[in-house]
Image (cartoon, rainbow, N blue to C red; front, top):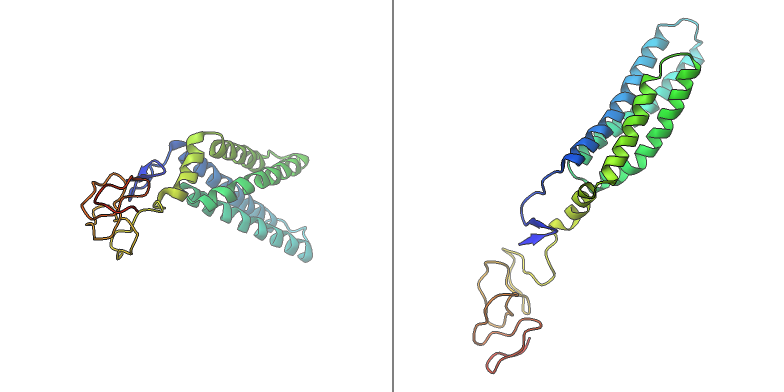
Length: 204
């Protein structure tokens, strides 16, 4: 039996757009980590920084490093189909675009080539577009939420039957138990919900 368009017990096949979108989210984190590493190396190579200014620089870069590492891990969780990661990525990508744009402006003002800022802006914008625009990407995350949720009328395999509960698929019928939809009626068996009662079977 299938829930959300996928057979029960089977994982939904990951769409290619999700693979691409998750990779782009991870690339945003890679650009951030690389930019921090480059900035720290260049800072330590200079001798004209005071101790206080260098400490502030390192603290700010450590925050950016944690932010970038989180986005890098977030890309892996998006690839695994975690809906919470998908939602968080849709919040973090606009923030990454703003951060990358600010980094781009600062780098251009310093008369340098803004490789990291440009990469962050482009990768974050592409990731947000790919993870939201295609319907296959949205369905992959939203349908996984209801994939393992059985309908209210079904019993759970291996769980003891309770009066008034239909049998689980493959479970034998017990007296006083209504049939599952599509299951043939047995004499003395109550009718299924919505099934008219016969001359010998009591109503549900």
